[in-house]
Image (cartoon, rainbow, N blue to C red):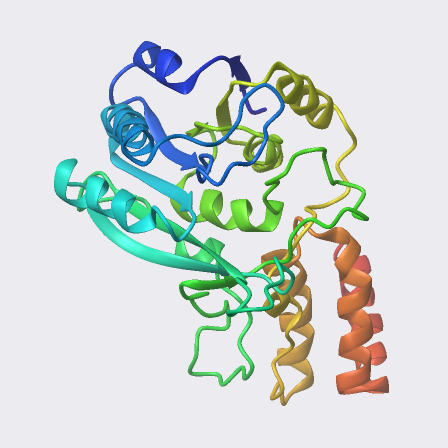
Length: 310
């Protein structure tokens, strides 16, 4: 069972208390300095002040990461290049990926193009680091027996919907991140019982995902109202993560034999929908539409085989 801890306080005051090289994975979604209101604080600093703030917490983050550790940093367009420079040139960490989180809804503009993405920097502390590719693969369009049946690398453009206000998992927080997006980071860059640190815990998404994936997690949060909200979220019933890469429901188009189909459909549920139980029925409906009545026979045969084994 995962060990979850919420620390209420300022990140710059709390980080010095964390031992050096003790954290496996850091996820940081700091305020973007856009003037958003976060209850007891206002996200608007002078330009140079914001860069000093960023340098201080990133320096501490580098110190507490294990030599094999990874950090993911969310950031808006105005400061993303400056954070890259701090991580790369000042802290001499190792750049791995510049991830584009693409979403379909966003702020509308009448002059210029409406933004439809956020940027996420992935840096590692050393050249040797954890990356569990099999845990984050996505289904391929075509099976092709020579390919990896387990799926493909998801790439550096990730499509996850925002957590809409009609979603039952939505919390009263202005920048709540989708659980499926955080799930991918945690699966990729940590193992079970590793320690994950969220420097700006916000609505508690990282803690919630770690709770379900058997990772230990510490979250630092300045706002006592959000701390209370996180505790309530962790105590609520889990019914499945609130978002998923749309490719996870993709069904290969060339499963040409009954045996291959039978094996693949059951593996698909385990590999790609394990934390997304509400989508399994939808997946099975899609299978029925694509492969027709024969799939019903396959499922009945599979169920019969499992019964006889028991």
